[in-house]
Length: 367
Image 1 (cartoon, rainbow, N blue to C red):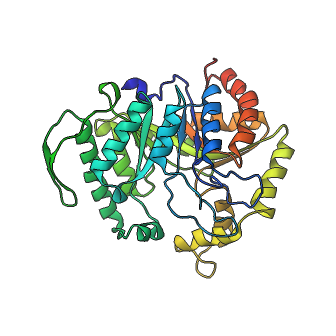
Image 2: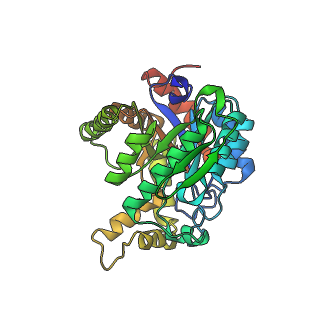
């Protein structure tokens, strides 16, 4: 299990690709080269990432796009079957499934996770989310619960999943939300272990849920105050430890890497200003209850959404990007899941130029 928790690598800073199962990934832009998220491209990307030593792939759980000219994230691949397909065609990389607990029955979910885990010989990871998008819940005919209650349901759901992964047989679960009778779940996860569980709860209750239940906690940052962030990361570890858990702490980001800082900044300005899909961004803002007439700093918040709803933006030369990732590590993070405008176009240059610099900094091992 220790090997699984380390994503089967000893790199000081783990690296992953975030959002490749969604069209446009996390870039709300109209540029023609934006990511399309076809199955063929996702498979090529997973195999390429594995060759470069990337540690994991983390998908976004998305059922409905955000409209605009591009219908941002409107074409998506379901994450557990996506993970199973990629795991069947790779050998070392960890692949997560991102699952809305309220939308999938735990007996079905537990069986799906074990199947993917066996396909990948223990390389499947579970990213559990409780959901926030009312439009997606409407598609399922489901009613979104109040915020605190979402996590109460999520706790019962995850307890049921873990019970089905355990040696328990013919057990009952008589919860407030979930009632199961004579549950029998075989086979079990790979090698007598269980999938790594992660969560990215942002609210105080979400953070509590993650630190009490998960092996990895993802938290987003935008501005680099290393001392402040380091305190927050240390506090997360301490809180988990007080609950008897050791937890990995990760963050997310967006990378634009070019030969010179000027080239990178010019391209970043092009896709975030000239070619932004502002209609999609305004839809996201409205879903969050943020409107120009009532929200202070509306324009600033609107601009921040162009390169994803959360995470740290890294723009510059290979030296600049390596320096930014070194600061991520200095904050105490175990790793980062990041996105590109186009993964297949941009990952090779990142691997050729940035990875060797990270090796020299002691953040990645050679080979």
